[in-house]
Image 1 (cartoon, rainbow, N blue to C red):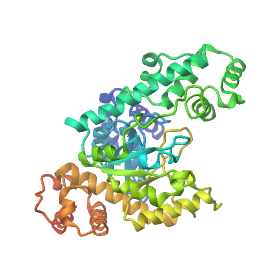
Image 2: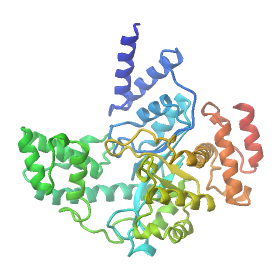
Image 3: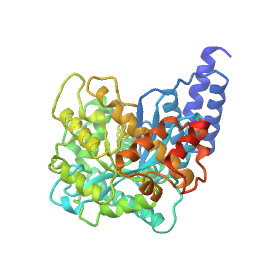
Image 4: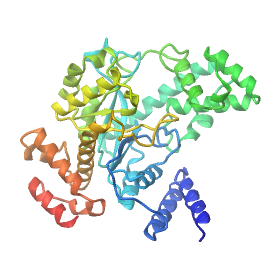
Length: 451
């Protein structure tokens, strides 16, 4: 087959990876894997780049990536480890881990939500303008199918978020008349799992306005008047600047649809950490940029988070530096990584990809990020090793087995980092059904013999 035709076929298969039909996604991924095995597609050896924080279309991905699509692109890019994180659901987990296994990609899956931190009730943490409210994560969930209290907790996260969205939409509809949304017909159709987010609603409003105002001048005038800011034609019909303005002016603090949350609006951080631990995952405190009142008290904040089970921290590097220009946020980033190392907290890093223009992977070769790569890569291997060992045998990072086998966190981190390095995706099944009596050294020996 001529090179051009082969390229077109690959592009078509990659497009199908984002289908809302899971069978079509699987068929496309299988075909791509077969082409890679036949040497028709070059898949590089894993390098040192990582992205452990990518949202999929099960919450909101600005490029509509499915779990399979992200796994495929991560493998094509030679990522060392890749991870997905979705808001309030684990819908991407099984598909992503299966796709990663097919592709020989080291992977993990997690969840993001918002929580209430009573100790910081009067201080803004990382949810702008909302004292006491913090974005929060769990990483390395071993499975999506939960039971009992954990299943109900997860359902409550999803249901509460959807009710909050519907109520918010009702208030925004009143302001944006004649541009009004129907939640089922206009919003839920944008995501395959029925887990819409504020970003889905922003896109839906932009789409609805385009339908009502067919001419560009009328559309720009409508948005400029309703949002109280000048909307340039280049931002139409649903460019990043317009979507950001819709969200800021209608849904966030000071917006026409915004209602301040109270302590009952989100689960307590302590309760969320108990849920994450009960699921066999690692609770993760998320850090924004160190400029809020709460994050300026980062030592106290970490004390509170760790006292209820947080054992890792998340940062979004690309938000916190300008290449070639040192600034306060860059200094804060270095400071929080220094604290993470001091406290033996593995670091989740990634680009989110839930807003247009965000990178597929951070530029780790920049002067600002390159010194931090060893920390990020070490952490990524820890999360990968935990994910596999917990999924296969229940002996992960937060397990009773880990508590019994390591004298301290530094020793535990060293083991999981080593395991994450030597373990290969094609050898993961060697960890199935390991006895709780096995030692850490025996686990490494077992993996080393088969990898």
